[in-house]
Image 1 (cartoon, helix red, strand yellow):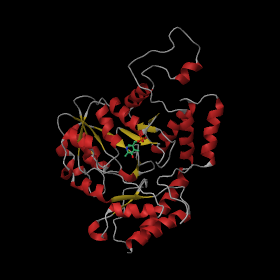
Image 2: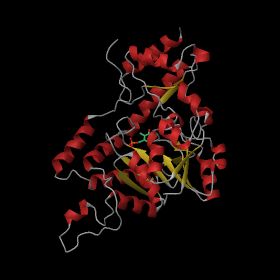
Image 3: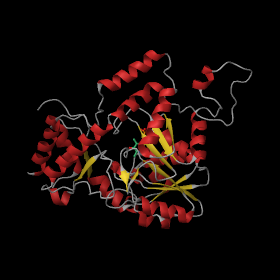
Length: 381
Ligand SMILES: *Cc1c(COP(=O)(O)O)cnc(C)c1O
C-alpha cells in the first residue's frame, strides 16, 4: 500500500530551505527587508496598491477589521461555512457576527445578505471557500449601496481571479494565510492587501506595537533622545524575515505549483465523473484558487455516510479533511447567538457531506493515482 498520504502536505523545495538558511546567516532574522520584499511581491501579484505582512491569517483578519473602524456595537456579516478564526476575530474586535447561509457552492449566498443588514452592520466578510471566489459583483454592489466595508477571507484563495481581477484587488481589504497547509506557506504567516492607504498604514501601526518606528529602522539609525513614540497601544503581529523568506521563495515557484494543482484537479474530475458523488462545482468567472478538492457524499446516493468514507480512506492510508463543520453547529456560536442546526440548511447539509481529498502541488504521480484508485474502489462498490 505504501506510505501514508498526508493531507495538506507542504511543497517545500531546496530553494525554500536555502532562503531560510540565508536569513538565519544574515544577522537579521526579525521583520525587515525580506518582509518588505514579500509585501512588494503581493502588491505585484494581486494588483492591490499596498500589502502588509503579519503573523497569521487570523491576525490579518483582526487588524483589517480594527483598521476599518469595526468595534463594539457593530455587526459583521459572514457565512458559517468557514474556519472558526473568521468569526472569532470578528468577536475579538468587540463586534457581533451575523451569519448568512451559503449557497450550493459553499460560498455566502449573496441573495440573502441584504435581509441581514441592520443599522449596526459595518462590513461584509465573504470567504472564498476552497479557493472559489464568491459572487463579488453582488457583494460589492450591496456593500456600496449600504455603505459597508468588504473584508475578504482569502485564506484559500491565493492565485484565484474573478472577472479579470486577482483576489486581493477587489474588496477594501483581503486577507491571505501562509499557514502550513495553504497554497503557499511559511509555516505561519498572513498578508493583507488593500488599495486604501489609511487601512494599510493603520494595519502597519497596529502590527508593530503602535509605535512610530519598526525595529528594522530603529536599529539602523543613530540613537537620539526619543527614538520612537507610542501613538496607540498596538500589538506584536510582526512576521519575522525568517518566515517571509520562505513565503517569498514559495511565491516564486507558484506558476509550477498552480499548474500541478490544476493537473491533479482535472484528473480527479475526469476519474470521479461516473461515481455517485458530488464534485467541486464548475467555476467560470476566472481561475479557481484550487486550494481544496472536496467531494460531497450523499447517503441517499451512495448508501454510505461521509464518516464511513473517511474511515475507509484512512484505512487505505489516505488522509482527508473536512472543510468545514458549519460554525453554527459549534458550541460557542450556537450558544452565544442561540442558533439551531436548521437555521442554515445549506451549511448544515455541506457540513455533513463534504470531504476534502489530498490536493497538494508536491504530490507524486503515484500518490495521485492511489487517491484515484482508492476513491473508485469505495464508490464502485
Ligand atoms: C486557515 C484559515 C484561516 C486562518 O488562517 P491562519 O493563518 O491559520 O490564522 C482563516 N480562514 C480560513 C477559511 C482558513 O482556512
